[in-house]
View 1 (tube, rainbow, N blue to C red):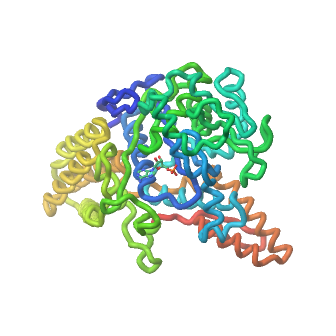
View 2: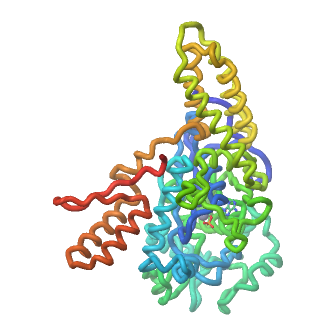
View 3: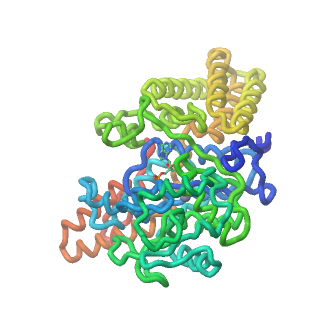
Length: 499
Ligand code: AMP
Ligand code: ZN
C-alpha cells in the first residue's frame, strides 16, 4: 500500500486547494512550527501538531521520503508576539516569576522541564518523532549569521536597541497573510513599537540588544537575544534547504510569524521559502476560547492522567481521535460529548482486536477486499485536504464489518482484519501506540541535558547537599526519568508514558 493518489491541500499562499508540488520528486521537505516551552502545551497546540503528524504519516505511507522538522522554541519571546515587532514581557521570564515558576532554579531549568513535558505528551498522543527536532538555543550561531547576512544585503539596519528587518526592502511582504496595506500594518504595530529609531513601524526585530535579559548571547552587536521569527527561518533552511515543500502551523502564525519567516529567508536566498502553507484553525473548549482565567485550559496530561492523580482518566488515543474528529481548516469545538464518542470508538477498536485475536477455523478470507476498499477511502479522504472526519467514518465502517462477522470470523479473515488495522494505524495512529523505544536510545534528544543533571546530582550528593540532590531527582522524575542508583554510580531510563 505504498502509493496512492496525490496529496491535495489548501495553500494559504494561493488561497486554493492545490496538489503538493515536490522540489525533488519522491522527497518531501516539511517544517512545522513547534511550541514555546514556557508552560505545558495545551490541547489546542496539540491539534496543530496533530495536523503535522497526520501529514507526515500520510506522506510516508504514500512512499515519500519525508524530512519532517519541528522545532522547540526555548528562547523567551515576548507576550505581544502577535504584532510584527514584538514588545511586552518575556514569556519565559514571566513564567519563572509565576507561582508555577517557583520550583525552577532559573529560566534554563524551566525550559528544560517543559521540553521534557512536551515530549511526554507528544508520545502519549502517539505523535511520531520528527526527523529533526531542533532547539532555538542550539542554533544561535546560525541566527546571528543570518542577521549579519541581512545587514550585508541591505535588508536590515541597526539602532541603539537592536537590529530590524526593513520591510520596505522586501516588496513581497504581505503575500501570505494579505497584510499588504502599509496603513493597516502601521495601525497593527503602532501600539507596541517602543524603539524611536525604527525607520518604519512595519519593521520587525531580528535581534534585541539587552544585557539584562535572562537568556542572552554575545553577538557582533553586544549581549542580547534574537527576534522570534529568525529561528524558524534558520532552522528550516539548515535542515531542509532553501526551498521547503510544505510549512505548517496554527492559524495565528500566518501573521506576523510566517510572513516574517518568508521575508527573512527569501531576502537571504532569493528563492521561494516554502511552496505550500497549511494552517490549522483554533480549538475552542465548549464554545469558548481556551484560557487559564476561564478554567478551561486543558492539557494532555490533565485529560489522560488517572482520576486518582486528579486527571480525567481518558485513554490518550481517544483524545487523539477526538482532536482529529473535526476538519483542520474549520474552527474546532472540543466538547465532553466529542470525547465520550471517541472513548466509545476506542472501545469498539479494542473489542475488534480481541475478536480478531481469538478467531480460528479454516475458510476463505471474507474481509480483506472490503477492508482494502475502506483503506483506499481513508487514504483518499486524507489526500483530499486532510479530511479526517471522512477518514474516521470509513474506520468506523470497517469496525462494523469486523464486528458484523463475529462468530463466522475465520483465521484468514481475521488476518486481513489485523493487517487492515495496522495500515489504518500507520495513517491515523489511533489503533495502538507506536513504541516509544526510540527515545530510550542514545539518540534521546534530551540525553545530554539529563546526563548533565545527573552529574550535578552526583556532585551535590558528594558534597552532602542533599536538598539540591533531591530537587534534581524530583525534576528528573517529573520529566519522566527514572534514576537507578548503584555502587557503580547512577544511571537513568525513560519511563514509558503509555500504560
Ligand atoms: P506556541 O507555543 O504559542 O508558539 O504555539 C504552538 C502552536 O500551537 C502554534 O502552531 C500555534 O499556532 C498553535 N496553537 C496555539 N493555540 C492554539 C489553539 N487554541 N488551537 C490550535 N492551535 C493552537
Ligand atoms: Zn515558526
